[in-house]
Picture 1 (spheres, one colour):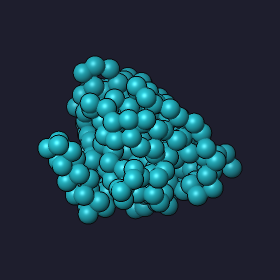
Picture 2: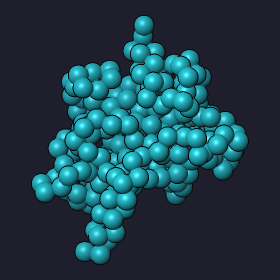
Picture 3: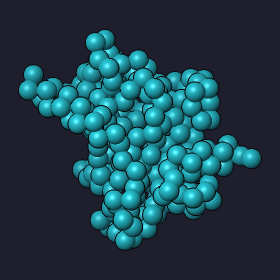
Length: 207
């Protein structure tokens, strides 16, 4: 069994009931799932692949923001689509991540994540303020395409420059459920964690 199929099978279990098996996910996948598909950039950014048997595939893409930036997206990790997306398609981003570790005094990393256009003005189709904990978890962002997109025209953005911090990113899935799919049936992040992330973001803006 290939690594791609193994990761898709693991995701099918984690994403049930919206995906019944790996073949279902494979037909919907807009990206390759392995952790080495991540790329990152920004002032003060560094990254490396690290071995971690705690996540599917056994490897993580570790990204460090050496300092807080003026904007969260001043350091970010991205994965681009390799298939087209049609106007009205419902898209789900699902990726494994963990804080490695959180900044001193914090219980989690604050990291906005988005499905967005890959070129300026980087219009966001969907976004979420994530609170990434020290344990491996799946995190989600859902969106609906507002026009047709060619391959590479959309990407995933996980934004890390809200503080000096390090995050480990595991397998990533960007799944196209087609038009008319019920957004309410897609998995969502822990609502308590989401509220904590939003409150942390508001507090930082006030400072």
